[in-house]
Image (cartoon, rainbow, N blue to C red; front, side, top):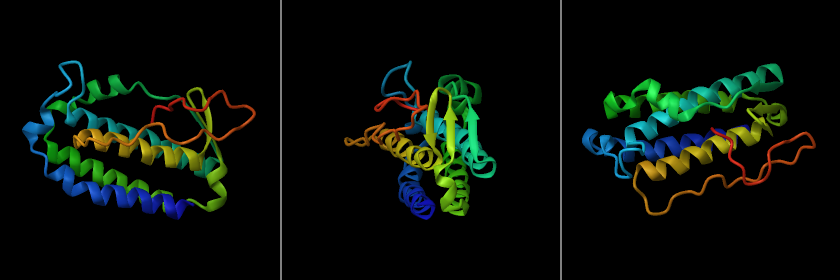
Length: 175
């Protein structure tokens, strides 16, 4: 499973890289949804924040046998980073490089560790679920950033049942 998930992540980032590179800096700065909605720059920045948070989760779950940590305040993170003022090319390059590292990490995780427990905020899931959810979350946002008509629904993965889970099917883990 880790190899398949790493391949899925690699395929996603390599397929979408040229699509993201085709967006101009001006287009990326626009707020088509209105002044209160994220621009493409901010939404891609959110995916960088997601990479940072999930990188830590994946590593700690793999090396410690379990991860326990908080979710993250995505709007506050996006505001704190000021992604709107960064060049689109910088954001695209950072997103691509960070996710290339994460794909390498995922491929290095032993199969036996994919069932390691991850407590994220209020949800209890497996490491394998968390990784798969990360990729689906990314695909959802990339479809939106690239203004596609068909947007990958999120969340689309069933939550694994675990007796201690306070997470119910259909609830979203903030990736």
